[in-house]
Image (tube, rainbow, N blue to C red):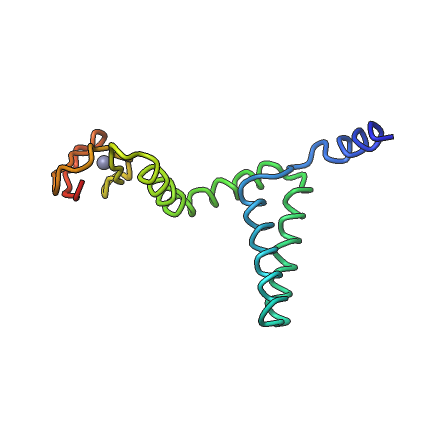
Length: 135
Ligand SMILES: [Zn+2]
């Protein structure tokens, strides 16, 4: 029985796009919007926005136009890169007591320096830009 359902689901999803980072974001955003709306504003507009986000995620998951969905996800990853790299820096700085991590202001390469040397001049290993930071 379970095997049958699994096979049917597999056949149904065959040739369809499935999930990616953008879909996870859409799903998470819609649930957040709907939850906040239910608990506080109870606004028709926010409810509609949550529905649109869920349907967008569902549409993309079941879409057969894989190429177009991949392009959307690449665009999404590009747009969210500054936010994602900022979180990545925070995580690295919290997890390493010996070093401090900075992002090069020119090429955004992550640069690691030893902690506790005061204000130092850092040269980016990739683009050779120099910038001052407190280690
Ligand atoms: Zn650089």
